[in-house]
Length: 142
Image 1: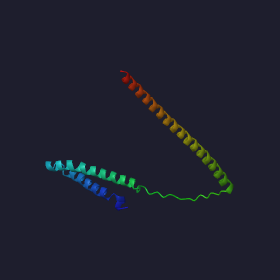
Image 2: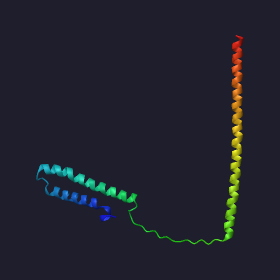
Image 3: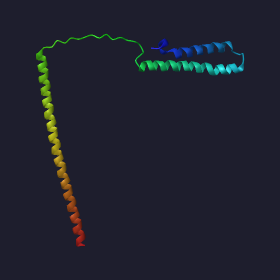
């Protein structure tokens, strides 16, 4: 982290804005040109302070430099006997076998549907040929 938790630019701009604000009060009514300059400079400088502060807070949040938190790591020891591992392995094997059967059934259904689609395409082609023959016969008889 940098100086003042990376808020150095915010602090410098804030001090400048505070000095401008004090000078504005001190020189109030001294010259109309100074009033115009202070009316323009003071709000702009305070706006810059706010923008710089928000930008630094956003940067700290995005890069994880906000609040420093330390996490305590603890080790968890799991004592396990071989029987529970075997039962878990058996359960997973049964589930895997049932999934394989389901996949095989789905593959068979897909193949069956593909055969039906090809049969329907053949029927459509036969109907088109019959329609074309009927049209040609009608033209030939005329």
